[in-house]
Length: 381
Ligand SMILES: *Cc1c(COP(=O)(O)O)cnc(C)c1O
Image (tube, rainbow, N blue to C red; front, top):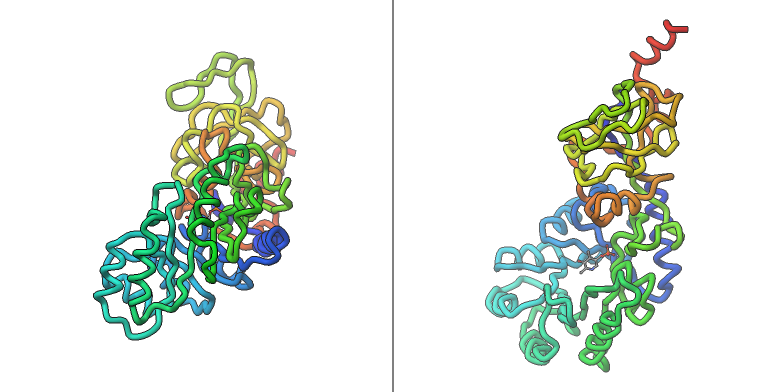
């Protein structure tokens, strides 16, 4: 039985996107960002598909431990680093590379006795004001870190760009310059670029790049879809029509009755909603594919269902496949209709959505029609 709501992942696309990253930055090493459960695609599955990456980056130590326990041998940077001695020791035990971004971490590095070598990244705050030390503090950190016996020297340096997704914003160049003011002349590994940096800011490329969203086949820029950058979508989310109704002009649809049928017409109900991670804020008029044809979503998104105007989709029947985003319907477009960014849609897919690495319809050698539909249409003929 094929579940009502499911995602199909194109792992070949993930691999191709990594190659595409390399074509943008042939000289740099690639630290594939797989935080937040591989942007909702599954941490281990994504890391396996990206095993050619030079390293991985995760947000939190527990994500790094999962990768090590699964047997990955690459370097792994932990972007939030540690907050106490126990987490510091876990970094060492699992050969994870913490990002050092504040004085408290220095205290821990100086007071915990580590059994062996620890590689670290020192993060400079060049203007994002989230994590990182002030450039003026750099020498103090460098001096104290140089005295910690177990830290591998030279330490690596990184920063993060706040506005790189806006290609007309001068702040990115300021950040890059501020980073180089500190890092210039220091012979060590340096890393600045996220996906937007890789695609739009050549000056940010440095030794290591940290692509996230582009690996998953999604553009970091609001105005351009991934295809423009030669990236292929990895996740497609599907459901099916579970009901079709005839409506009369003026009928109100869904909670609150926000949307009224402007003419007599056909309404389709698909089995997916915010309980699956399809955002409640997707607005009336957002496109949805029914058997590959675009139809508009109407009314409010419910927990388990959405309504579609099928007036111009005469052939649609119960059991037909509905695609929420993916191949043929960029997630970037849906994000705009939900007044959000594609990252939140990918990460927001819930446990209820089954993930397949190949299209289950092809896998089972059958179409996606609900058995009941086939029965009914057969008897009607
Ligand atoms: C999430 C993250 C990235 C990846 O960003 P994308 O926009 O997904 O490419 C890179 N670096 C840091 C520090 C991050 O937190």
